[in-house]
Image (cartoon, rainbow, N blue to C red; front, top):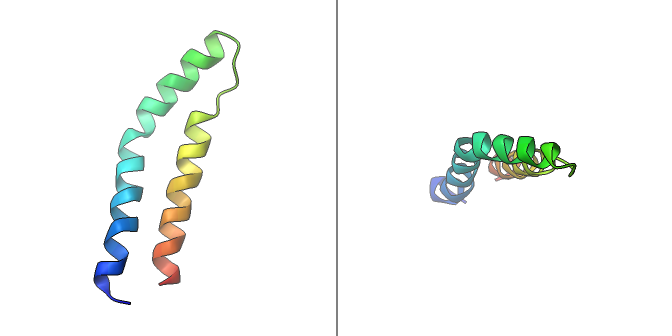
Length: 57
């Protein structure tokens, strides 16, 4: 396991962090029509898993 094994998880977490504002807007729209806001929560949990995978290597 080397540095190059970390890159995919690091990039995935970075992309998810960048698109979090889009998920927040989607959740606001979902709440306004009476749906549950799940997008931001699932996106952050996924990024958290990617980061924890980095430290398991």
